[in-house]
Image (tube, rainbow, N blue to C red; front, side):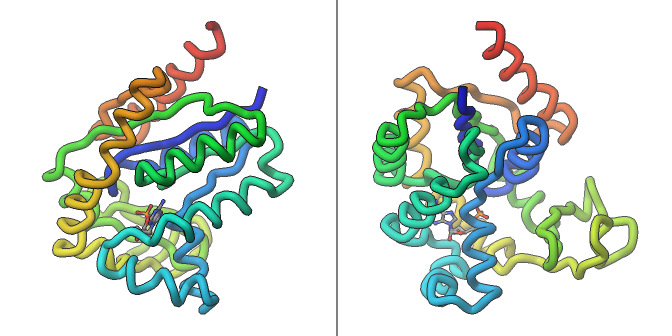
Length: 220
Ligand code: AMP
């Protein structure tokens, strides 16, 4: 059985960290639409040029662009045993399109995990988040700082603050999340695909809770 998992939650809830954990555990790729866009911006591709103005002001990149990216990515060979979506779908239009793509593929969604966390905690987390320019490893200056200031523990790359992690932009992203992305939760809740977790706990605690969901699934 292919595992098709969506990790859902507001910016800063820990989607990337938990998606990476599950990706290692199940040996299926993590598809982070945010990472794909940032990579395109870094490489200066036409996708990057198109996406940058939306990203830097905390707005969503248009649905057609995002759906096209995911549609192509899930055709890759490494997705043949399933994949973990991190940061997609983010609107009802993307959600409906994903359903169609999965139907066509004959592989229904296994599980959606929503990481819940308060706006206050998100602002604290995101403004102290730093990311490695080379390998995308994520740090938090308050709870998970790098061993050497400004350098990645994994690859020694330079750590930076994303433009969209600055406080004014974070507030804008939260508003967009509330308006455009939370309706997706209702969609999955109605389909009984949604499990909600408290994302404000430590990384290890959330990992434990995520694993418990899959153990439960395996015994059903
Ligand atoms: P993330 O790293 O998931 O927080 O994504 C960073 C930014 O990339 C978002 O604020 C959006 O501008 C853009 N982005 C990523 N995924 C999507 C998506 N599924 N739909 C629209 N925009 C997206």
